[in-house]
Image (tube, rainbow, N blue to C red; front, side):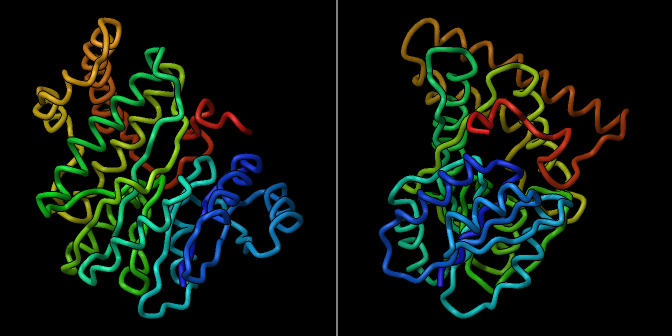
Length: 303
């Protein structure tokens, strides 16, 4: 059985698209879609339009809190796979089959999908979204580490795990990082399915951009609180060293994109300095979820 958990937050239009994209997957395995959302509008949409989809009333205490509850409720059987994704993204038509291929290796415990930007590349924020996903997340981070057999982080936009191995995890850290780490510590491999694509809308203004990047970075910093030996993948110094890679300067296609690439460096530095100030002096740490003040409105174009 394949369990597909879609966590959303009052995004009925986007969630409808996300559900339909999974219903269109061509796989032979039985699957069950579970949508977790705290809003009655989404429940009504699911009940009326998708009778085969299960609605889970999200207690609205954060994404990790909700995932912990659902993971605890799923009846675990050998061979079952749990796929986790968000309601404001949608998958490629071959995403599930590409993920399931990786699980044919019994040593694989987690499979990470590949986020692809929906934004146009003809503006600064759109270009940054493509650059950070294509070069940073894909080439430098996941693909390289996967090919070397190293630990790699998944993506909360789309990743899958073997059922029954990890049933709970800390609430105040990034679920797409801590879950792979817990599998890795148990001796499982983390696979990267680069053809399991998930399409994502990114921030289109500076305020939302910084908010999103700080949220992601902050969630990773807290991992050391629970796991002192956690292998750092996302850090300021990693970005500095990886930023001189040949792949970075090969990516821009014209002078404008070259300039946008250069301008990303001081902006990332500002983000890390702002995060350091928040943690050190304001004592403001990452909390579970991407809700309320953590919400990035410009990434939700359908709702």
